[in-house]
Length: 297
Length: 304
Image 1: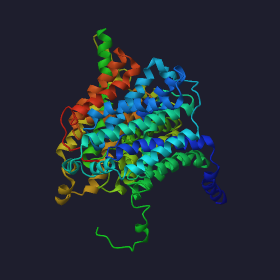
Image 2: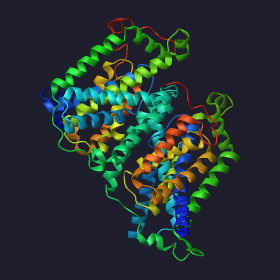
Image 3: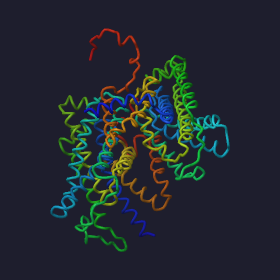
Image 4: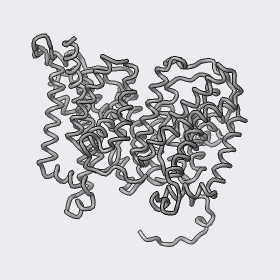
């Protein structure tokens, strides 16, 4: 019993002794969580973010390694490349909604994986080694800060309100004069762009990338950040990415059983908070100080 | 040349038959609940391990078990696991959920089952013992220059028998009728006196039992690993969409087509691109024929 309490306490105190590598991983995962959140602002569930991450990573690496391009420019190019592919994929794909969209984007990510498995210029199955370790805390959290400011401002902007309208009801939004197709494409491509940047950061942090760094499991992880943290507000994926990344290392003391415990936590959260841990109401003072009123079932 | 081709056709039939069993389970669950069960491949994996464990224990105690008994045991084992999945990962969510919530819970279940399988059965590749195949020996079919081994015949025959049995179950029995009613419209079915909860449990049980049978059949032809469920699940999903969601006959035909495509692409195209083809097909179907080749009974669009 004592040992259990001690290890649980360590899970909490461990937060204050995170190393630079941990913080970078958490930051990159937060960026990936936001990349999934962006399509969600128009109600689009994209499971293909791992594919865009892969594209961004490969473009950025090829630029820094073989062309000697300055790192920020390479990152931007990776993001733009992924965003462009996102736009091209988005045109036919965004006709679908809900589950079908999730499936088709997921299949897209698988095709990207098979592509890089067979693409000789980026080392095919061997991947690329010896990438320069350019990524540091400044880059990761600088980009994250820009994203956060952008998303915080987006919510109250004209575009943000249009996104919100599309998310709630496409037909009504269209009737109100919102260009639904344009809004969806914007959000989807922006998500791909952010995922590409995250991929570039990841590659220059891991210094070795291979096609299967961006596989099915990565896609599921990214989806979990958003779903667990909360998919209605941008700080949801941030919390989700932090919890998942941190707990998967902090639960080491469970040794062999950590995946079982981890899966059970996910199921429990989904049962009791299907919208994720953080919702629009979680941080509102009014909700917490309001008198409880019986609500109609 | 022709001989290899026919051999590939037989391999395709064998693979397709097993895939069909997984895909039919997908379609049943999707039909009744309108939700995707992403741990379905893992249920099949558990089924094949149940069969394997049973065979190995029986062999150390008294001798080789008849192959059909193994199949039935695996079906029961997988059926129980499937019902447990329903009770843990679907039932508590309620019916009015976002589509993504059950996706995530079943993915979590899939991870749990994979890890549990690694822990209990070990992570190395296993296969059924040779003695198992001896009981089928001597019944190989020789058609001119082509040769169908008895194992292949058993796999094809068992999957066909199960498919036909399921078809009659769904079309002709009272419970099958209730299942179809739930797939059509849950509320109406409930108003007409169908116990929807009970039907849901049975649907999961039957779908998972079929998956367990598929696990054993695949295990007879290839290997058993804790990760075999991932590929099986994805293929089952592709086939379900290909054949039209909720359409059982469609799933059967689509499974045979996909099994053929897979064996042919390994034989005649670049093997490394194999999965790329499967997913490319999936994308094209979703984009241009979201109701599948043979039409869908269901509406699967439904918002977010």
